[in-house]
Amino acid sequence: MSLKDSSSRSRIIEVARNKFMSSGYKATSTRMIAKEVGITQPNLYYHFKNKESLYLGVLDEIGGEVYTDLLAIVENDQLDLTGKLLQMSYYLQDNQDMDIYTMMQDMQADISIESRRILYQIFQESYKRPFVLLFDDYEKQLKHQLTGEKIATYFFVTLAPYISSKHTISKTIALEEMIDLFLHGII
Image 1: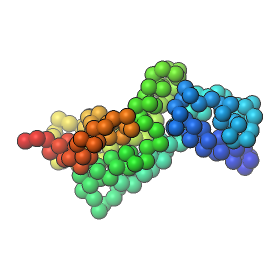
Image 2 (image 1 turned 90 degrees about the vertical axis):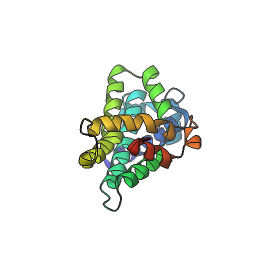
Image 3 (image 1 turned 180 degrees about the horizontal axis):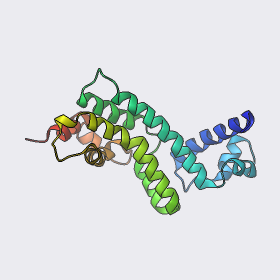
Image 4 (image 1 turned 45 degrees about the horizontal axis):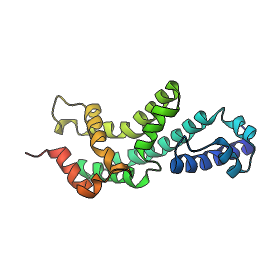
Protein backbone atom coordinates (compact mmCIF):
# COMPACT_ATOMS: atom_id res chain seq x y z
CA MET A 1 0.00 0.00 0.00
CA SER A 2 1.39 3.37 -0.98
CA LEU A 3 1.79 6.25 1.47
CA LYS A 4 -1.12 8.06 -0.20
CA ASP A 5 -3.33 4.96 0.06
CA SER A 6 -2.35 4.56 3.71
CA SER A 7 -3.13 8.20 4.41
CA SER A 8 -6.53 7.97 2.68
CA ARG A 9 -7.38 4.79 4.57
CA SER A 10 -6.44 6.42 7.88
CA ARG A 11 -8.57 9.47 7.11
CA ILE A 12 -11.53 7.25 6.13
CA ILE A 13 -11.20 5.34 9.42
CA GLU A 14 -10.99 8.59 11.39
CA VAL A 15 -14.12 10.09 9.81
CA ALA A 16 -16.02 6.79 9.92
CA ARG A 17 -15.13 6.38 13.59
CA ASN A 18 -16.60 9.78 14.42
CA LYS A 19 -19.75 9.10 12.40
CA PHE A 20 -20.35 5.53 13.63
CA MET A 21 -19.67 6.41 17.24
CA SER A 22 -21.89 9.47 17.28
CA SER A 23 -24.75 8.25 15.06
CA GLY A 24 -24.52 4.46 15.12
CA TYR A 25 -24.09 2.01 12.30
CA LYS A 26 -27.53 2.26 10.74
CA ALA A 27 -27.67 6.07 10.62
CA THR A 28 -24.23 6.40 9.02
CA SER A 29 -23.81 6.06 5.27
CA THR A 30 -20.67 5.54 3.23
CA ARG A 31 -21.78 8.52 1.14
CA MET A 32 -21.62 10.77 4.23
CA ILE A 33 -18.18 9.44 5.11
CA ALA A 34 -16.80 9.80 1.58
CA LYS A 35 -18.14 13.35 1.35
CA GLU A 36 -16.52 14.38 4.64
CA VAL A 37 -13.22 12.72 3.70
CA GLY A 38 -13.33 14.52 0.33
CA ILE A 39 -13.27 11.39 -1.84
CA THR A 40 -15.75 9.60 -4.04
CA GLN A 41 -17.74 6.62 -2.83
CA PRO A 42 -15.93 4.30 -5.29
CA ASN A 43 -12.63 5.51 -3.81
CA LEU A 44 -13.90 4.60 -0.34
CA TYR A 45 -14.84 1.16 -1.68
CA TYR A 46 -11.30 0.79 -2.97
CA HIS A 47 -10.20 0.73 0.67
CA PHE A 48 -13.21 -1.03 2.21
CA LYS A 49 -15.44 -3.37 0.24
CA ASN A 50 -18.60 -2.17 1.99
CA LYS A 51 -19.98 -0.30 4.99
CA GLU A 52 -19.79 -3.40 7.16
CA SER A 53 -16.08 -3.95 6.50
CA LEU A 54 -15.46 -0.27 7.28
CA TYR A 55 -17.36 -0.63 10.56
CA LEU A 56 -15.24 -3.67 11.43
CA GLY A 57 -12.10 -1.70 10.59
CA VAL A 58 -13.16 1.11 12.91
CA LEU A 59 -14.01 -1.22 15.78
CA ASP A 60 -10.79 -3.18 15.28
CA GLU A 61 -8.81 0.06 15.55
CA ILE A 62 -10.68 1.10 18.68
CA GLY A 63 -10.20 -2.37 20.11
CA GLY A 64 -6.45 -2.21 19.58
CA GLU A 65 -6.27 1.10 21.43
CA VAL A 66 -8.42 -0.18 24.28
CA TYR A 67 -6.30 -3.34 24.66
CA THR A 68 -3.05 -1.39 24.79
CA ASP A 69 -4.38 1.08 27.35
CA LEU A 70 -6.03 -1.53 29.57
CA LEU A 71 -2.95 -3.76 29.48
CA ALA A 72 -0.81 -0.84 30.66
CA ILE A 73 -3.07 -0.56 33.72
CA VAL A 74 -2.89 -4.33 34.36
CA GLU A 75 0.91 -4.12 34.26
CA ASN A 76 1.10 -1.11 36.61
CA ASP A 77 2.87 -2.44 39.72
CA GLN A 78 1.92 0.67 41.70
CA LEU A 79 -1.73 -0.40 41.92
CA ASP A 80 -3.41 -3.26 43.80
CA LEU A 81 -6.34 -5.28 42.41
CA THR A 82 -8.93 -2.72 43.53
CA GLY A 83 -6.92 0.18 42.10
CA LYS A 84 -6.43 -1.58 38.78
CA LEU A 85 -10.12 -2.49 38.48
CA LEU A 86 -11.12 1.06 39.33
CA GLN A 87 -8.68 2.60 36.86
CA MET A 88 -9.68 0.15 34.10
CA SER A 89 -13.36 0.85 34.75
CA TYR A 90 -12.86 4.61 34.72
CA TYR A 91 -10.90 4.24 31.49
CA LEU A 92 -13.81 2.42 29.84
CA GLN A 93 -16.28 4.90 31.27
CA ASP A 94 -14.33 7.98 30.20
CA ASN A 95 -12.83 6.85 26.89
CA GLN A 96 -15.63 4.92 25.35
CA ASP A 97 -16.35 6.42 21.93
CA MET A 98 -19.64 4.62 21.69
CA ASP A 99 -22.33 3.37 23.96
CA ILE A 100 -21.74 -0.39 24.17
CA TYR A 101 -25.49 -1.05 24.23
CA THR A 102 -25.88 0.82 20.93
CA MET A 103 -23.03 -1.19 19.44
CA MET A 104 -24.62 -4.46 20.60
CA GLN A 105 -27.97 -3.40 19.16
CA ASP A 106 -26.30 -2.53 15.84
CA MET A 107 -24.57 -5.90 15.87
CA GLN A 108 -27.80 -7.82 16.41
CA ALA A 109 -29.88 -5.96 13.88
CA ASP A 110 -27.77 -4.69 11.05
CA ILE A 111 -24.69 -6.77 10.31
CA SER A 112 -24.00 -10.26 9.07
CA ILE A 113 -23.47 -13.26 11.30
CA GLU A 114 -19.81 -13.47 10.20
CA SER A 115 -19.25 -9.83 11.16
CA ARG A 116 -20.95 -10.41 14.50
CA ARG A 117 -18.47 -13.21 15.12
CA ILE A 118 -15.58 -10.89 14.27
CA LEU A 119 -16.94 -8.16 16.56
CA TYR A 120 -17.31 -10.69 19.35
CA GLN A 121 -13.65 -11.65 18.87
CA ILE A 122 -12.65 -7.98 18.96
CA PHE A 123 -14.57 -7.56 22.22
CA GLN A 124 -13.06 -10.72 23.71
CA GLU A 125 -9.48 -9.79 22.81
CA SER A 126 -9.57 -6.04 23.31
CA TYR A 127 -11.94 -5.42 26.17
CA LYS A 128 -12.31 -8.65 28.11
CA ARG A 129 -8.83 -10.20 27.81
CA PRO A 130 -7.07 -7.52 29.92
CA PHE A 131 -9.60 -8.18 32.71
CA VAL A 132 -9.03 -11.94 32.41
CA LEU A 133 -5.28 -11.34 32.66
CA LEU A 134 -5.81 -9.13 35.70
CA PHE A 135 -7.92 -11.71 37.53
CA ASP A 136 -5.50 -14.47 36.54
CA ASP A 137 -2.69 -12.42 38.16
CA TYR A 138 -4.64 -12.48 41.44
CA GLU A 139 -5.68 -16.13 41.13
CA LYS A 140 -4.40 -17.07 44.62
CA GLN A 141 -6.65 -14.46 46.22
CA LEU A 142 -9.79 -15.62 44.40
CA LYS A 143 -12.20 -18.41 45.19
CA HIS A 144 -10.70 -21.63 43.88
CA GLN A 145 -13.63 -22.61 41.64
CA LEU A 146 -13.57 -19.31 39.77
CA THR A 147 -11.39 -18.66 36.74
CA GLY A 148 -10.19 -15.28 35.48
CA GLU A 149 -12.44 -15.80 32.46
CA LYS A 150 -15.56 -16.37 34.55
CA ILE A 151 -14.84 -13.48 36.91
CA ALA A 152 -14.20 -11.13 33.96
CA THR A 153 -17.55 -12.17 32.47
CA TYR A 154 -19.37 -11.40 35.72
CA PHE A 155 -17.51 -8.14 36.08
CA PHE A 156 -18.52 -6.95 32.60
CA VAL A 157 -22.16 -7.70 33.32
CA THR A 158 -21.85 -5.59 36.47
CA LEU A 159 -19.81 -2.85 34.79
CA ALA A 160 -21.97 -2.46 31.65
CA PRO A 161 -24.39 0.14 33.07
CA TYR A 162 -21.43 2.28 34.17
CA ILE A 163 -20.02 2.50 30.66
CA SER A 164 -23.31 3.20 28.93
CA SER A 165 -24.69 6.68 28.48
CA LYS A 166 -28.24 5.26 28.43
CA HIS A 167 -28.17 3.97 31.98
CA THR A 168 -28.15 6.04 35.13
CA ILE A 169 -27.05 3.41 37.66
CA SER A 170 -23.71 5.18 37.98
CA LYS A 171 -25.57 8.09 39.53
CA THR A 172 -27.14 5.77 42.13
CA ILE A 173 -24.19 3.57 43.12
CA ALA A 174 -20.67 4.96 42.81
CA LEU A 175 -18.25 2.97 40.69
CA GLU A 176 -15.94 2.61 43.68
CA GLU A 177 -18.77 1.14 45.76
CA MET A 178 -19.73 -1.27 42.97
CA ILE A 179 -16.14 -2.53 42.68
CA ASP A 180 -15.88 -2.95 46.44
CA LEU A 181 -19.14 -4.93 46.50
CA PHE A 182 -18.00 -6.98 43.51
CA LEU A 183 -14.66 -7.89 45.10
CA HIS A 184 -15.75 -8.31 48.72
CA GLY A 185 -19.46 -9.10 48.62
CA ILE A 186 -21.87 -7.95 51.26
CA ILE A 187 -20.72 -10.23 54.10
